Length: 406
Image (tube, rainbow, N blue to C red; front, side, top):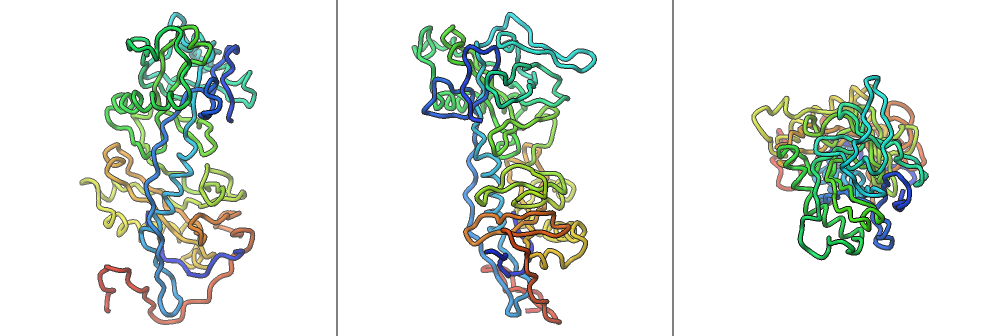
């Protein structure tokens, strides 16, 4: 991700839940080593890439600043941390799986029938599962059902793995219930490959979806159930599974948000999309499809930046209503870059966003859409002095080509 020139003026200021073994429902919980006997399935948490440090350069007349591409990548690394840092969501099924029953499916009128935990076991590769989450673990997911993947759902099954076929004591009858760490390792061992195979190698490990695992509850395990299900899910920063629409293999998995979206902030780290009237880290001003500009293949980061700087700038100016609004509100324009793994998976879109970085390296808390009045960390932004008349050029970055006319 790379940022756009901005003024150097600083901003003013300065579910978890255990599996209920005797309830006829499935359960979701975050991994907790201290409560491994009630933990439910886990989701793959890809590591956020190491972020580079931020550097800025200003001209001698205190004009607009140019921020190095590494700054934007560090901001985007924070975005990634917010998106996947809490993605270790586990899904357990109280009572285990039983393939002798069929999952409830939508009627011709589009309604979704209820599903017991025994009927849940009929799900297989290509099935999509939906339920209505509640805060009560005794009633949550009682309406679990198979739905068309074209309808909203929370889990897409990629493969069923029967651990009972492995001739090891760990999975034998009467074996102890695995803890959360072991289920996470089973997810890593089986599900990453299963999901790539299921999507024909088109799963983006750094996109908006993550690899998930569903497995039996402690009661189901004690009853001899050993089937686990690998699948795909979308996890929010709060660890709650988000609603998806469409089969993952058929859509763009780019980590982007719709234009006009604001992404929340907690302790300087972006969280989930939120109303712009609430504290947020940044606001999306445009979504750019790089495939339209680069149909021949993956462009270098430098080529992406050369295209995205004017493209995102133009989009920001149009979104905010003028070329000076960004500077007057002391905000920074930044964008992401697409890497090879994402490009090969078909993820070729990036967001152009505006936010404010704080000295500690995280995001400031902004309230209000940048189209109107905003506060930054509780105070209204103070516009910097006007740029003096005449040409004003930023200081070249280390190793950069000489500025035109220099």
